[in-house]
Image (tube, rainbow, N blue to C red; front, side, top):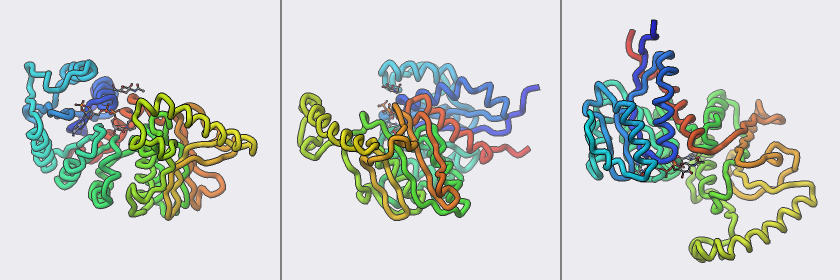
Length: 353
Ligand SMILES: NC(=O)c1ccc[n+]([C@@H]2O[C@H](COP(=O)([O-])OP(=O)(O)OC[C@H]3O[C@@H](n4cnc5c(N)ncnc54)[C@H](OP(=O)(O)O)[C@@H]3O)[C@@H](O)[C@H]2O)c1
Ligand SMILES: *[C@@H]1O[C@H](CO)[C@@H](O)[C@H](O)[C@H]1NC(C)=O
Protein backbone atom coordinates (compact mmCIF):
# COMPACT_ATOMS: atom_id res chain seq x y z
CA UNK A 1 0.00 0.00 0.00
CA UNK A 2 1.40 3.46 -0.85
CA UNK A 3 2.28 5.71 2.07
CA UNK A 4 -0.43 8.28 2.79
CA UNK A 5 0.54 11.87 2.05
CA UNK A 6 1.23 13.56 5.39
CA UNK A 7 2.76 16.83 4.18
CA UNK A 8 2.00 18.93 1.12
CA UNK A 9 4.47 21.76 0.61
CA UNK A 10 3.33 24.50 -1.79
CA UNK A 11 6.39 26.20 -3.32
CA UNK A 12 6.87 29.41 -5.28
CA UNK A 13 10.29 29.62 -6.94
CA UNK A 14 11.96 32.96 -7.70
CA UNK A 15 14.66 32.50 -10.34
CA UNK A 16 15.07 29.69 -12.82
CA UNK A 17 18.69 30.00 -13.84
CA UNK A 18 21.30 27.29 -13.32
CA UNK A 19 20.28 26.51 -9.73
CA UNK A 20 16.51 27.05 -10.05
CA UNK A 21 16.22 24.72 -13.04
CA UNK A 22 18.19 21.98 -11.29
CA UNK A 23 15.90 22.39 -8.31
CA UNK A 24 12.81 21.86 -10.48
CA UNK A 25 14.42 18.79 -12.09
CA UNK A 26 15.31 17.37 -8.67
CA UNK A 27 11.76 17.97 -7.41
CA UNK A 28 10.31 16.11 -10.39
CA UNK A 29 12.78 13.21 -10.26
CA UNK A 30 12.43 12.80 -6.47
CA UNK A 31 8.62 12.37 -6.58
CA UNK A 32 8.74 8.60 -5.85
CA UNK A 33 11.29 9.06 -3.05
CA UNK A 34 9.28 11.85 -1.42
CA UNK A 35 6.02 9.90 -1.86
CA UNK A 36 7.58 7.05 0.12
CA UNK A 37 8.20 9.54 2.91
CA UNK A 38 4.64 10.85 2.72
CA UNK A 39 5.71 14.21 1.31
CA UNK A 40 4.48 16.00 -1.80
CA UNK A 41 6.10 19.21 -3.08
CA UNK A 42 3.62 21.28 -5.05
CA UNK A 43 5.26 23.92 -7.25
CA UNK A 44 2.52 26.53 -7.54
CA UNK A 45 4.56 29.29 -9.18
CA UNK A 46 7.85 30.00 -10.95
CA UNK A 47 9.26 33.47 -11.66
CA UNK A 48 12.13 34.80 -13.73
CA UNK A 49 13.29 38.42 -13.98
CA UNK A 50 10.29 39.51 -16.02
CA UNK A 51 7.30 37.35 -15.23
CA UNK A 52 5.54 34.81 -13.04
CA UNK A 53 3.90 31.59 -14.10
CA UNK A 54 1.33 30.62 -11.50
CA UNK A 55 -1.18 27.78 -11.11
CA UNK A 56 -4.83 28.79 -11.66
CA UNK A 57 -5.84 27.69 -8.20
CA UNK A 58 -2.85 27.73 -5.87
CA UNK A 59 -5.00 26.29 -3.07
CA UNK A 60 -5.68 23.00 -4.78
CA UNK A 61 -3.06 22.24 -7.41
CA UNK A 62 0.41 23.03 -8.69
CA UNK A 63 2.03 23.32 -12.11
CA UNK A 64 2.25 19.81 -13.53
CA UNK A 65 5.57 18.04 -14.03
CA UNK A 66 5.33 18.08 -17.83
CA UNK A 67 5.04 21.86 -17.72
CA UNK A 68 7.95 22.17 -15.26
CA UNK A 69 10.14 20.03 -17.53
CA UNK A 70 9.10 22.04 -20.56
CA UNK A 71 9.76 25.27 -18.68
CA UNK A 72 13.31 24.17 -17.80
CA UNK A 73 14.02 23.30 -21.42
CA UNK A 74 12.72 26.67 -22.60
CA UNK A 75 14.78 28.62 -20.02
CA UNK A 76 17.89 26.55 -20.86
CA UNK A 77 17.42 27.53 -24.48
CA UNK A 78 17.38 31.18 -23.45
CA UNK A 79 13.65 31.87 -23.83
CA UNK A 80 11.88 33.92 -21.16
CA UNK A 81 9.04 32.38 -19.13
CA UNK A 82 6.65 34.66 -20.99
CA UNK A 83 7.28 32.57 -24.13
CA UNK A 84 5.31 29.74 -22.50
CA UNK A 85 1.87 30.97 -23.41
CA UNK A 86 0.32 27.62 -24.19
CA UNK A 87 -2.55 25.64 -22.81
CA UNK A 88 -2.60 24.57 -19.23
CA UNK A 89 -4.03 25.32 -15.83
CA UNK A 90 -1.82 28.30 -15.27
CA UNK A 91 -1.62 32.03 -15.81
CA UNK A 92 1.24 34.29 -16.72
CA UNK A 93 1.79 37.72 -15.20
CA UNK A 94 4.44 40.20 -16.19
CA UNK A 95 6.19 42.71 -13.94
CA UNK A 96 5.16 44.69 -12.00
CA UNK A 97 1.94 42.68 -11.65
CA UNK A 98 3.95 39.46 -11.23
CA UNK A 99 5.32 40.75 -7.93
CA UNK A 100 1.91 41.52 -6.47
CA UNK A 101 0.68 38.08 -7.56
CA UNK A 102 3.48 36.49 -5.52
CA UNK A 103 2.33 38.53 -2.51
CA UNK A 104 -1.29 37.47 -3.17
CA UNK A 105 -0.25 33.82 -3.12
CA UNK A 106 1.83 34.34 0.04
CA UNK A 107 -1.06 36.12 1.78
CA UNK A 108 -3.60 33.47 0.86
CA UNK A 109 -1.44 30.39 1.45
CA UNK A 110 0.21 31.90 4.54
CA UNK A 111 -3.27 31.98 6.14
CA UNK A 112 -4.24 28.46 5.05
CA UNK A 113 -1.81 25.72 4.04
CA UNK A 114 1.42 27.66 4.30
CA UNK A 115 3.91 28.37 1.52
CA UNK A 116 7.64 28.00 0.94
CA UNK A 117 8.99 30.96 -1.02
CA UNK A 118 12.32 29.89 -2.54
CA UNK A 119 14.87 32.46 -3.73
CA UNK A 120 17.20 31.10 -6.42
CA UNK A 121 17.69 34.48 -8.04
CA UNK A 122 20.92 36.45 -7.86
CA UNK A 123 19.55 39.89 -7.03
CA UNK A 124 18.79 42.18 -4.07
CA UNK A 125 15.43 42.90 -5.65
CA UNK A 126 13.71 39.97 -3.96
CA UNK A 127 14.34 41.20 -0.41
CA UNK A 128 10.98 42.97 0.05
CA UNK A 129 9.06 39.98 -1.31
CA UNK A 130 10.92 37.69 1.06
CA UNK A 131 10.22 39.99 4.01
CA UNK A 132 6.53 40.22 3.07
CA UNK A 133 6.35 36.43 2.87
CA UNK A 134 7.82 36.15 6.38
CA UNK A 135 5.28 38.74 7.55
CA UNK A 136 2.47 36.54 6.19
CA UNK A 137 3.74 33.53 8.11
CA UNK A 138 5.31 31.78 5.11
CA UNK A 139 8.54 29.80 5.13
CA UNK A 140 11.49 31.00 3.08
CA UNK A 141 14.47 29.18 1.60
CA UNK A 142 17.38 31.00 -0.03
CA UNK A 143 20.32 30.09 -2.24
CA UNK A 144 20.61 33.81 -2.94
CA UNK A 145 22.93 35.55 -0.46
CA UNK A 146 21.99 39.12 -1.31
CA UNK A 147 18.77 39.51 0.74
CA UNK A 148 20.67 38.26 3.81
CA UNK A 149 23.66 40.56 3.29
CA UNK A 150 21.98 43.94 2.85
CA UNK A 151 20.85 46.11 5.76
CA UNK A 152 21.09 44.39 9.15
CA UNK A 153 17.38 45.14 9.78
CA UNK A 154 16.50 43.08 6.68
CA UNK A 155 18.53 40.13 7.95
CA UNK A 156 16.84 40.44 11.33
CA UNK A 157 13.39 40.44 9.77
CA UNK A 158 14.17 37.48 7.48
CA UNK A 159 15.47 35.30 10.33
CA UNK A 160 12.87 36.46 12.85
CA UNK A 161 11.04 33.11 12.68
CA UNK A 162 14.18 31.02 12.71
CA UNK A 163 12.31 27.69 12.38
CA UNK A 164 10.74 28.96 9.13
CA UNK A 165 13.86 29.95 7.23
CA UNK A 166 16.59 27.81 5.67
CA UNK A 167 19.60 29.17 3.76
CA UNK A 168 22.10 26.33 3.87
CA UNK A 169 23.12 26.73 0.21
CA UNK A 170 24.23 30.34 0.64
CA UNK A 171 27.48 29.14 2.27
CA UNK A 172 29.37 26.18 0.81
CA UNK A 173 26.51 25.11 -1.51
CA UNK A 174 25.21 21.76 -0.23
CA UNK A 175 27.68 21.45 2.68
CA UNK A 176 26.04 21.59 6.14
CA UNK A 177 27.88 24.71 7.31
CA UNK A 178 24.92 26.82 8.51
CA UNK A 179 23.33 23.79 10.18
CA UNK A 180 26.55 23.02 12.06
CA UNK A 181 27.01 26.61 13.22
CA UNK A 182 23.35 26.83 14.27
CA UNK A 183 23.57 23.61 16.30
CA UNK A 184 26.72 24.71 18.09
CA UNK A 185 25.26 28.15 18.84
CA UNK A 186 22.03 26.57 20.13
CA UNK A 187 23.95 24.30 22.50
CA UNK A 188 25.55 27.30 24.19
CA UNK A 189 29.01 26.25 23.08
CA UNK A 190 30.68 29.60 22.26
CA UNK A 191 32.23 29.71 18.77
CA UNK A 192 35.53 31.57 18.95
CA UNK A 193 36.60 31.34 15.32
CA UNK A 194 35.51 30.14 11.91
CA UNK A 195 38.09 29.87 9.14
CA UNK A 196 36.98 28.88 5.69
CA UNK A 197 37.99 28.59 2.11
CA UNK A 198 34.68 29.28 0.46
CA UNK A 199 35.43 30.48 -3.01
CA UNK A 200 36.81 29.73 -6.36
CA UNK A 201 38.91 32.91 -6.75
CA UNK A 202 38.73 32.62 -10.51
CA UNK A 203 35.07 33.67 -10.27
CA UNK A 204 35.49 36.09 -7.42
CA UNK A 205 38.69 38.09 -7.81
CA UNK A 206 37.22 41.00 -5.87
CA UNK A 207 36.29 38.74 -2.97
CA UNK A 208 32.76 40.12 -2.64
CA UNK A 209 31.01 36.77 -2.98
CA UNK A 210 33.06 35.19 -0.22
CA UNK A 211 32.63 38.36 1.88
CA UNK A 212 28.86 37.84 1.67
CA UNK A 213 29.28 34.28 2.94
CA UNK A 214 31.50 35.53 5.76
CA UNK A 215 28.90 38.17 6.65
CA UNK A 216 26.14 35.55 6.89
CA UNK A 217 28.31 33.48 9.25
CA UNK A 218 29.30 36.52 11.32
CA UNK A 219 25.66 37.59 11.66
CA UNK A 220 24.78 34.05 12.79
CA UNK A 221 27.38 34.47 15.52
CA UNK A 222 25.55 37.58 16.65
CA UNK A 223 27.68 40.29 15.05
CA UNK A 224 25.45 43.18 14.01
CA UNK A 225 27.68 44.19 11.11
CA UNK A 226 27.33 44.96 7.39
CA UNK A 227 29.42 44.47 4.25
CA UNK A 228 31.17 47.81 4.97
CA UNK A 229 32.60 46.40 8.19
CA UNK A 230 34.35 43.48 6.50
CA UNK A 231 37.97 43.90 5.65
CA UNK A 232 38.23 42.42 2.14
CA UNK A 233 41.59 41.92 0.46
CA UNK A 234 40.89 41.95 -3.24
CA UNK A 235 43.05 39.70 -5.40
CA UNK A 236 43.76 42.63 -7.68
CA UNK A 237 45.30 45.94 -6.57
CA UNK A 238 43.01 48.97 -6.89
CA UNK A 239 44.94 50.23 -9.95
CA UNK A 240 43.70 47.12 -11.74
CA UNK A 241 40.15 47.26 -10.34
CA UNK A 242 37.00 47.52 -12.45
CA UNK A 243 36.80 51.29 -11.83
CA UNK A 244 40.31 51.86 -13.19
CA UNK A 245 40.73 49.34 -16.01
CA UNK A 246 38.30 48.01 -18.60
CA UNK A 247 37.60 44.29 -18.59
CA UNK A 248 39.40 43.90 -21.94
CA UNK A 249 42.53 45.65 -20.68
CA UNK A 250 42.42 43.64 -17.49
CA UNK A 251 42.25 40.37 -19.37
CA UNK A 252 44.88 41.57 -21.87
CA UNK A 253 47.62 42.77 -19.52
CA UNK A 254 46.21 42.97 -16.00
CA UNK A 255 46.10 39.23 -15.44
CA UNK A 256 49.75 38.94 -16.41
CA UNK A 257 50.75 41.62 -13.87
CA UNK A 258 48.67 39.87 -11.26
CA UNK A 259 50.35 36.57 -11.97
CA UNK A 260 53.80 38.06 -11.53
CA UNK A 261 53.17 39.69 -8.15
CA UNK A 262 51.30 36.61 -6.98
CA UNK A 263 54.13 34.34 -8.01
CA UNK A 264 56.48 36.21 -5.67
CA UNK A 265 54.12 35.86 -2.72
CA UNK A 266 53.65 32.16 -3.43
CA UNK A 267 57.44 31.66 -3.59
CA UNK A 268 58.04 33.51 -0.34
CA UNK A 269 55.39 31.43 1.43
CA UNK A 270 56.78 28.23 -0.01
CA UNK A 271 60.29 29.03 1.29
CA UNK A 272 58.72 28.94 4.75
CA UNK A 273 56.99 25.61 4.09
CA UNK A 274 53.66 27.35 3.66
CA UNK A 275 51.03 27.91 0.99
CA UNK A 276 48.72 30.85 0.29
CA UNK A 277 44.98 30.36 0.59
CA UNK A 278 42.19 32.86 0.08
CA UNK A 279 40.17 32.50 3.26
CA UNK A 280 37.55 34.17 5.38
CA UNK A 281 38.13 34.43 9.10
CA UNK A 282 35.39 35.21 11.56
CA UNK A 283 36.22 35.79 15.22
CA UNK A 284 33.89 36.80 17.97
CA UNK A 285 34.33 40.47 17.04
CA UNK A 286 35.92 40.57 13.61
CA UNK A 287 35.38 39.36 10.09
CA UNK A 288 37.91 39.47 7.28
CA UNK A 289 38.58 38.03 3.87
CA UNK A 290 41.96 37.72 2.21
CA UNK A 291 45.11 35.77 1.43
CA UNK A 292 46.59 33.91 4.36
CA UNK A 293 49.80 31.94 4.65
CA UNK A 294 49.08 28.49 6.04
CA UNK A 295 51.12 25.35 6.69
CA UNK A 296 51.21 23.04 3.66
CA UNK A 297 49.95 20.10 5.69
CA UNK A 298 47.01 21.86 7.39
CA UNK A 299 43.47 21.02 6.26
CA UNK A 300 43.24 24.33 4.42
CA UNK A 301 46.75 24.00 3.06
CA UNK A 302 46.01 20.60 1.54
CA UNK A 303 42.92 21.91 -0.19
CA UNK A 304 42.75 21.23 -3.93
CA UNK A 305 40.49 22.25 -6.78
CA UNK A 306 37.11 23.77 -6.07
CA UNK A 307 36.51 22.08 -2.72
CA UNK A 308 35.39 24.22 0.17
CA UNK A 309 36.63 23.77 3.73
CA UNK A 310 35.28 25.30 6.90
CA UNK A 311 36.91 24.90 10.33
CA UNK A 312 34.82 25.78 13.37
CA UNK A 313 36.52 26.40 16.72
CA UNK A 314 34.55 26.51 19.97
CA UNK A 315 34.93 25.35 23.55
CA UNK A 316 34.04 21.79 22.54
CA UNK A 317 35.98 21.99 19.28
CA UNK A 318 39.05 23.73 20.59
CA UNK A 319 42.22 21.84 19.75
CA UNK A 320 40.43 19.70 17.18
CA UNK A 321 38.04 21.90 15.20
CA UNK A 322 34.88 20.70 13.51
CA UNK A 323 35.86 20.45 9.84
CA UNK A 324 33.42 20.41 6.95
CA UNK A 325 34.85 19.75 3.52
CA UNK A 326 33.60 18.90 0.05
CA UNK A 327 32.40 20.32 -3.25
CA UNK A 328 31.28 23.86 -2.51
CA UNK A 329 29.69 24.95 -5.76
CA UNK A 330 27.83 23.77 -8.80
CA UNK A 331 24.22 24.09 -9.89
CA UNK A 332 23.36 20.47 -9.14
CA UNK A 333 24.89 20.39 -5.63
CA UNK A 334 23.50 23.80 -4.73
CA UNK A 335 20.01 22.83 -5.89
CA UNK A 336 20.24 19.59 -3.91
CA UNK A 337 21.00 21.71 -0.83
CA UNK A 338 17.95 23.86 -1.54
CA UNK A 339 15.76 20.79 -1.91
CA UNK A 340 17.05 19.39 1.39
CA UNK A 341 16.18 22.75 2.99
CA UNK A 342 12.61 22.52 1.65
CA UNK A 343 12.27 18.93 2.88
CA UNK A 344 13.56 20.03 6.27
CA UNK A 345 10.42 22.17 6.64
CA UNK A 346 7.99 19.28 6.10
CA UNK A 347 6.88 19.02 9.73
CA UNK A 348 5.45 22.55 9.53
CA UNK A 349 3.18 21.34 6.73
CA UNK A 350 1.73 18.25 8.36
CA UNK A 351 -1.94 17.64 7.82
CA UNK A 352 -3.84 16.73 10.96
CA UNK A 353 -4.34 12.95 11.04
N1 LIG B 1 25.71 28.04 -8.97
C1 LIG B 1 26.32 27.85 -7.82
O1 LIG B 1 27.27 27.09 -7.72
C2 LIG B 1 25.81 28.53 -6.57
C3 LIG B 1 26.29 28.11 -5.31
C4 LIG B 1 25.76 28.70 -4.14
C5 LIG B 1 24.84 29.74 -4.26
N2 LIG B 1 24.43 30.15 -5.50
C6 LIG B 1 23.48 31.23 -5.59
O2 LIG B 1 22.26 30.76 -6.17
C7 LIG B 1 21.62 31.82 -6.83
C8 LIG B 1 21.24 31.37 -8.22
O3 LIG B 1 22.42 31.12 -8.98
P1 LIG B 1 22.35 30.80 -10.52
O4 LIG B 1 23.71 30.39 -10.92
O5 LIG B 1 21.21 29.92 -10.78
O6 LIG B 1 22.02 32.27 -11.11
P2 LIG B 1 21.49 32.63 -12.57
O7 LIG B 1 21.76 31.50 -13.50
O8 LIG B 1 22.00 33.99 -12.87
O9 LIG B 1 19.90 32.71 -12.41
C9 LIG B 1 19.25 33.75 -11.78
C10 LIG B 1 17.76 33.65 -12.08
O10 LIG B 1 17.08 34.64 -11.30
C11 LIG B 1 16.15 35.30 -12.14
N3 LIG B 1 15.81 36.62 -11.60
C12 LIG B 1 16.50 37.79 -11.70
N4 LIG B 1 15.85 38.76 -11.06
C13 LIG B 1 14.73 38.21 -10.54
C14 LIG B 1 13.64 38.71 -9.77
N5 LIG B 1 13.58 40.00 -9.40
N6 LIG B 1 12.64 37.86 -9.41
C15 LIG B 1 12.70 36.56 -9.76
N7 LIG B 1 13.71 36.03 -10.49
C16 LIG B 1 14.70 36.85 -10.87
C17 LIG B 1 16.81 35.33 -13.49
O11 LIG B 1 15.83 35.60 -14.47
P3 LIG B 1 16.16 35.60 -16.06
O12 LIG B 1 16.21 34.12 -16.40
O13 LIG B 1 14.98 36.29 -16.65
O14 LIG B 1 17.44 36.31 -16.22
C18 LIG B 1 17.39 33.91 -13.54
O15 LIG B 1 16.38 32.99 -13.93
C19 LIG B 1 22.61 33.01 -6.83
O16 LIG B 1 22.21 33.91 -5.84
C20 LIG B 1 23.94 32.36 -6.49
O17 LIG B 1 24.80 33.23 -5.81
C21 LIG B 1 24.90 29.55 -6.64
C1 LIG C 1 25.21 26.51 -14.04
O1 LIG C 1 24.19 26.99 -14.85
C2 LIG C 1 24.54 28.13 -15.62
C3 LIG C 1 23.30 28.64 -16.31
O2 LIG C 1 22.68 27.60 -17.01
C4 LIG C 1 25.66 27.76 -16.60
O3 LIG C 1 26.05 28.90 -17.34
C5 LIG C 1 26.83 27.24 -15.80
O4 LIG C 1 27.83 26.79 -16.68
C6 LIG C 1 26.40 26.11 -14.89
N1 LIG C 1 27.52 25.76 -14.03
C7 LIG C 1 28.02 24.53 -13.96
C8 LIG C 1 29.19 24.38 -13.05
O5 LIG C 1 27.55 23.60 -14.57
